[in-house]
Image (tube, rainbow, N blue to C red; front, side):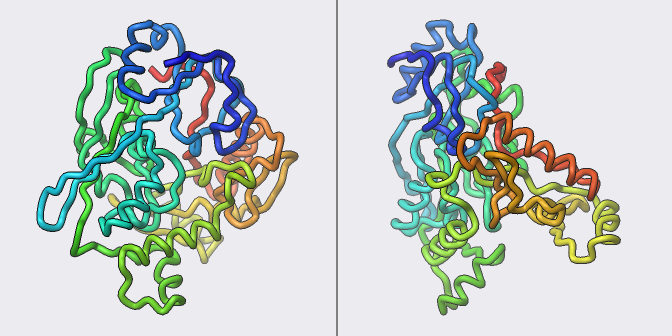
Length: 345
């Protein structure tokens, strides 16, 4: 393993932000981590685990160590007549895993197609889309403690999943390096979910009346390609904000002014409002400020038109958050991780 200094991160974050890391290391096998732990650099420097850089905003240069996940490989284990355990290494492409599972007719993650990022990043965010969340199919996560080098296996319950949240975002969980993720998927009798978003509309337009999991996956890919900009063409990190969850009183207050307010009931008498609706209604969709702005087709997406700094994008997000709070009384939260070179421990 080679430790590099002053490493350029522009090609390793989908925003395309110009930033450098004080130190940079690629983790291709578990031994690389143990070598780093033995060297003491993880206690002397701040550090950050980086997958595909699709959910991160570098505010500036990173004054510490970037650990780039390169672990690869996939194994399977049949566990019943209609279920299989699929284990993928942390450095594998998430969408690549989804496509391989669809090719083998393994169901459960087809609604999560085309979500950018690595397999190892998926549990951190508890990724979700179109009516499904990773936590619904996750069996366990294998981790390495970056303080001790010890390996452990954390089951679904221990991972403490929530809406775009998990143990790995909490202080006690940030010391873990995820080495692999194991999913419990179906091999037959699949639970097909077409109820969310435009999936059923797309399938209906294609004349599909009894969709397979492959039909659902292809529909999701089509929808995402239509709504979300390609990071290869314009810098972005997908959805920048979480959909806020509020109480009934706030829903009623907003409805008094906006009768068309969309919302969805969740647990404990709480309601989820689409953040995109709030941002668009506040007038931010398609708005541009210098080298950054809000995407013209999707209000949740902030973009780098070229040459934007991380600070500029962060400032834009704060302006949007302040405006939405003023107009609706709703506090938006960022979904994208802000990297500032501070130790996560």
